Image (cartoon, rainbow, N blue to C red; front, side, top):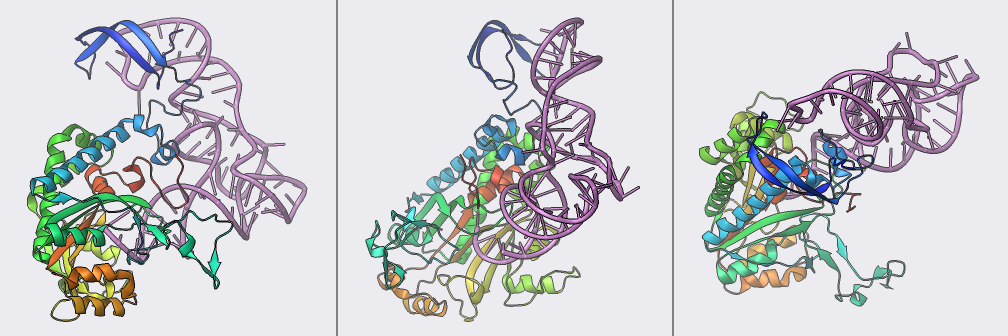
Length: 400
RNA sequence: UCCCCGGUAGCUCAGCUGGUAGAGCGGGUGGCUGUUAACCACUAGGUCGGCGGUUCGAGUCCGUCCCGGGGAGCCA
């Protein structure tokens, strides 16, 4: 009758008394026990032992009951609170940018289509899909970034940020990519690249100190079971600051390195994952900010430097994860932006409103995007990004 | 999409050069116990990812597909 096992929901009343047992200070001397919900031990999948993360992903509705996922949820919550606190304390306005967007080529990867068409009978005109008959009267997608929209508010209100879900339909299978993830995107008017880099460092430092103080127990749990030395690493990053170098300097350092790379290092080519890790984990042994990349490997909206070859871009790399922040000072000159769009093969008509932000009362401004799940990964030491979001969406996986 | 590794009991895995499967944990039963992811005994669980092929015979070899993991690209 009283086979209360793992997974049961119970109500216990009794007296809290000092415990003679090891590893606990108090225990409850039960006087009354009520079972709200039984859990058949023969079929209940969670056991009082360690399960693999792969297995737990197949029972995503039950995994928050494990101590690891409970700790992740608490740290994730705390980081979210810390981010809002950081911006609110500095007078940034939280802007809710749209989830559904009409621009279909923001240059940040493949997009998910949004439609109410009966997929078995899609209206066509001259062989092409006729989106004028669709719900919005034009093609629509899930957003890949709130940046373009949040720029409009920065140029009206000063310092703003958005923090919401974003979507990428890339067929990527790695431990640091999701099809649906959350992104923090501040945007500041009258700010240049230096101010942008400074904000990124301040933000990261602030949230690390915040969780080190408020989630101490959970972080120590991760340090013990997930990644040894985690707390020390976080404390170092929060106190010792970051390294900042230009893309050109990075190429020079990498060229002079004795290490053999799979991909060649040369000015103009993108810095590969292996190069990023080398700089972060071996050369500097701390987070690195790389700035001023060649314009060819960066999006059209980044401000062109006077040299005409590089743009005012910044990437913030952290050990183990790689790129956690990507941002730039934006191109605020109408003519230059128009030219860069054409160079990139984009149709300026699709961005008419974005161009108008430069046509009327343009101002220098800058911002960046912080991948929230990558931050949670970095803070918790959890290996796979699928384990730091409640219900991960990846190619071939939308169960739950 | 490309490269590498894997898919054997509910979970975590073992199974040498081909001869129709094992352990620990979990479950059940009994015992023991101020227990802590306890201990002892007994016991029930498997179309060895799917399909096709080679062979007298395949978990083991070959082909193919599906799924998972690691890495790359893309990025956050």
